[in-house]
Structure formats: C-alpha cells, structure tokens
Image 1: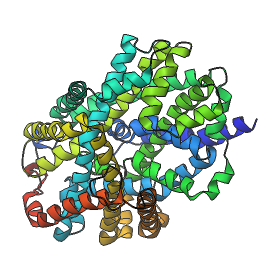
Image 2 (image 1 turned 135 degrees about the vertical axis):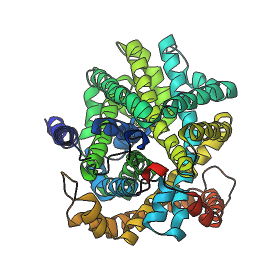
Image 3 (image 1 turned 180 degrees about the vertical axis):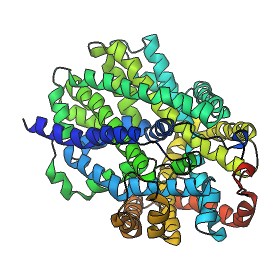
Length: 32
Length: 492
C-alpha cells in the first residue's frame, strides 16, 4: 500500500507533469 | 529576406522538443540515475531531484535558451553579446568543456553500440563471464577505435544535412523510439517475480537519508548533469528556433522529459537487479559499484536468467545507443555552430569538428584511465559553465531577461521567483556543489590530492582547468573579433 501511494505521488508528479506540458505545448503554435 | 536566404531552423516545435529531449536524455539517465536512487533513499532522493529541476536545471536551461534565441550565435558569440566583449572567453570555456567531454563521450557511445551488437548476436548466454567479456573489449584498442569512429561518423552524417534535414528528421524518430524501448524494458523489470523489493528501493522514501548531505548533493549534481543545463547545448539548439518560440514551456518539457526517462530506466534496472540477484546486499553492492559495472557486467549477466531476456537485452542496449547518440549529436553541434560563427559553412564545419572529435578521442579509446581522468575533470567543469551562464544573466539583468525575453512570447510566464533563483539560489547551489566536489577529491586522496597527473585528484582538475583558462583568456579578443553573425541574420 505504501509503495502504491508513493508510486502515484512520484510518477504523477513527473510523468503527469511531462504529459501535461507536452499536451499544452502541442496546443499553442509558436509565433513566427 | 528571401526564403532561400534564411538560416536553417527547426521546422516545428515538436522537432525542436525531440532534439532537445534527446540532448538531455543520455547514458547518465540509464546507468547513473538508477544507482543514485537506490543508494540515496529512493523517493526522498527523487523529491530533492525534482526540486533541483526548479532551483538549478530549468532556470539555467531557460537562461541558455534566452541567450541563444536572442543572439542567434553559439556560446562564444552569445557571451560576447550578452556579457560584453571582454567576457567572450566564458563562452569559449563553455565550448571547450563541451567538446572535451564529446571527445570521450563518442567512445562511450561506441561501447553502447558494441553491446547492442553483442545482444543481437546472442552473446549473453547463460553462464557467460560478462566480466571477462567487458575486460577483453575494453582492452581491445582497435575495437574501441572502430566503434568510436562509427559513432562519430553517424553523428557527422546527420549533422552534415543540417538542423531541419538532419537533426530534426532523425530525433523525431529516435526519441519516441527511445521512450518506447524504455517502457518495454521497464514493463519487463516490474513484472519480474520479486520486483517489489526493487520498486520499494525506487519509490518509498527513506527519510533518514535526508540527514546525509551526500543525498542532497548527489541529487542536485545528477539534475545538473542530466538535463544538460550549463553545457551550451540548449543555447546552441536555440539558435535554430523561431524568434518568438516559448522559452519556459519548452525548457520545462525538456526537464520533465529527462526525469520521465530516468524514472523509466530506474524501473527497468533496479527491479531486475533486486529480483535476479541472490540477496538485497548483493544488489546494493552492484549499485554501489560503477556505471559500466552495472550495465556491461551485471545487467549483461542477468539478461540470460530473465524470462524474455534475449529479447529485452537488444532493446535495452538499443535504448542506450539512442540516448547516447541523440546527446552526441547535440554536443558535436556546439563545435559546428562555433565554426559556422567563424564564417565557415556547415559542411566544412562538420568535417572539421567530427575529424577533431575522432582524433582527440583516440587517447580515451585506447587508454581507459585517460577516459576516466577526462570524465572526472570536465564533469566538474560543467558546474563552472553553469555559473558563467548565471553571471551572464546577472550582467544583463535577470528581471530584464524575464520581462523582455522570456515572458513576452510565453504561454507559461515566469514570475519573480525565477529572478530570485537566478540571482541568489542557483549561485549558492554552485558554491556548495563545487566546494563539495573539491572536498571529496581532497578527502579521498589526503596525501596526494595535489598531484596533477593522477586520474581522480583535485590537482589534475586545477592543472587542466588552468591550462584551458589561460589559453582562452589570451585568445579572448581574437575570438570576439572572429565571431560574426551569418549574413542572412544581419539586420538591414
């Protein structure tokens, strides 16, 4: 249980952050 | 400005991100991060490592991107334009350190290639003596030279075709493939019988390790080295982005992408070691060893004992090759960009840089002790490069950089914390980390620390740094004069 909780916290923070930023980056086109 | 006359640049944001993530994710993510996590408190270490992204790595990456995107020149020209003509040598130091690392990193990339060939040949059979296999390869100069040449040749072919036609095309395939390989290897690792113990070593925090200064220092160092902050790589790639490309968002994507790859690698490596070795003590012994020992001896020996190991071994080593090669491409580009800023075209610059990389890498390819010495000396020097970037920001004004360069075209705007980190927190981290590395160097050789010709002493660091610094400071005015903006970038 302890392992599951910490996996969710750490992977959520890192992988979640990465996927969120990637999706956000793909939605905004850079200005020329 | 006609379309044909425009400087080569990334065609899309995804192309730039693929190249930049490939730059950051290197062999260190796969063979160093898992060892550090297991040794320094698992989750506690990862939390500090994540904090380091905000206090050192991401602010430095943003500073580099701000410099490269604005100056449209490599490190030498960027320092001249941002800090002043008299400080051009700082940019030259950044280029020199990056290239000195590149000389031996091509040899390391060659090792990964050789082990991929071994894996495809099925060389990791049950009972194979992987220590003897590694020793035999390491002491075969011709084999090392061949694979070093192959690594540089492939990198040269890609860079010869330019940013859009070479780097972007290749990294858009290699980086997703690298993540896919790591996911497959991690899935195999976490589904092994007995993988739970390894997973606990990665994720469950050992809070007692927070009292050990080494945990903090190793996490900060790993983040600084792993993201490529202070290497001049992000600065160089940023020369080729659109003039209003988002700085903060892209740098955070690169930072989090680097951490994602590192965590995947840890999930592939640590559960495998803990599940297949006879005891947790034996597993910890492997983790306390060396990067090459973990990868080329221990893991290579465990693949035959793992269900599906004959398939996982080529996938794992191919991931190492892709990680190393995409970083090597970025490193060699720093040299190419520098020569292009001196007025040479890309083709000539590529031939000269790759030729130099091969020639100056020969000692590392044939004498393992020389490679270890260079890794020791120039790895620590990267912290100095990072400090020079902080000085450049301080000279230009962190608030000015934030308000005039970073925020106007940003989706994610930086608040005042960014300037505070650049002005106070990051310089403090630099002082602590550099002092600590010198303390370690002196404490581990209390009687011989001053010796300039030993492999891992403080003396060899100081000796080699002084030689490079003196040469670059003497060449300062020449370098400042020689660096010119390409004609197509001169504003009319």
